Image (cartoon, rainbow, N blue to C red; front, side, top):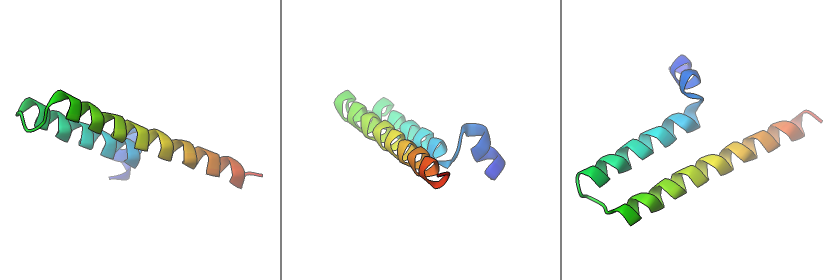
Length: 64
C-alpha cells in the first residue's frame, strides 16, 4: 500500500482525491448542489495545503 501512496504523492493526496471523488459523485447524482460541492472542495484543498505546509515547516525546523 505504501507504493500506491507514494505513486499518488502520499496519504494526504490519496485521501484528498478520495474526498473529491465522493463529493463529485454527490454532485452528479444531485445529492448536493454546486455551491455545496465548491465549499467541500475548498475545505479539502485548504486542509491538504495547510497540513502539507505545516509538515514542511516542521521538517525544516528539525534539520536545524
